[in-house]
Image (cartoon, rainbow, N blue to C red; front, top):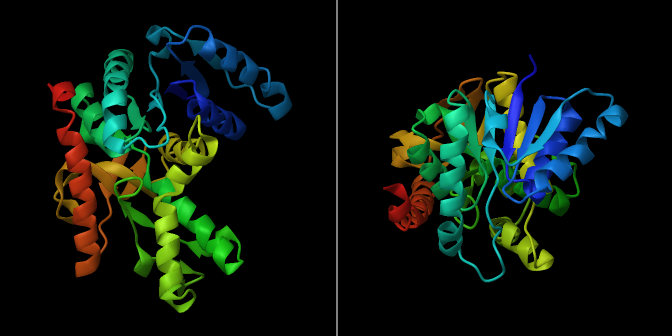
Length: 311
């Protein structure tokens, strides 16, 4: 049997994820959305593309969670995008109810699935999904660091005039403005960034990547990033379905790693068929550790505001 992936939320990001998955021929796809007809219409459109892609994947659109049964991976993209001027704390209150309902319904029909949360603020809502689902920690993870790392790669490549394939860039921490670019571990073909880019310019690039999501929101005005988040989700799903043991920066549950406990946070994660196989720890200097703890404090602050949903 072909693997089955359910995407809950057929908006821009959910649809982009379905498109990337279909283009890679990784699985059969179920799109689910509460808006009548939305998932069905997009599923038909994507199904009609299969002959041109040369694949025979099945794409189903539905409002009924029963059709998601026996999924190998559950992806939660449902929720509202951040609007100009909206804080991540504001967004958490808007999206917590949506994520809670989606998690409870989806796990009912696919208790063995690995669950990936994309809905922002992703670290806090992945923690909420973990608590609501009752799943073991390895079966619940969030997407965030892959996207931040990719954005950093792009900006560095543009600054240096090289291919993104030549840039190795890595981030830790909470997704968004709390993330921490690991400058000492990032390089271009082994050459440290500090040897290639002046300190002030590198600092400006770090600030721009931290605010990349906000930059996109302000430009679009009525939406947020979709193509790159969908590609990041697809990389995670591929690692799960094909059991590649690939190490990717994701939001995973920490129990002592990096000195953190009791929260979901952006860390290097080895991913396989069971989900999180292990967290790969990196040595941090005093400055990096201080920045990581500050990022973790922001995530904890958002989680504390979700107490009503965690009961």
